[in-house]
Image 1 (spheres, rainbow, N blue to C red):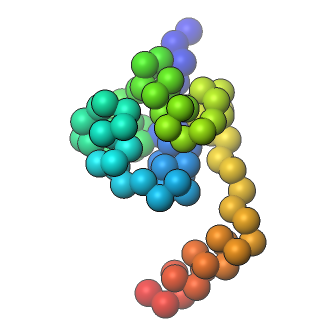
Image 2 (cartoon, rainbow, N blue to C red):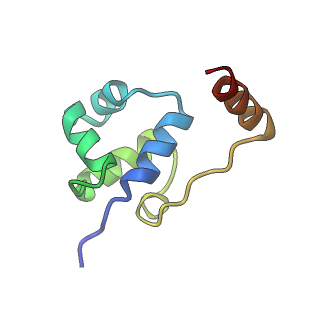
Length: 87
């Protein structure tokens, strides 16, 4: 059974690292459009993508396939809440 990329987990981790899709795609050596399609769940990344994503996002392949997303620290959560409230 092929590994399935959890695109939502990739997106959450990418955002937590402060990377745009273009920056992440450049590091992973994939097109931004392909990364977007993976994050949206329209395409599966495959093993090569999972390896690159895990390295860039400082996590394991299992974290991505199982949808494990690190918790934000209290300061990050309050900052995100404050910026959302200001919008």
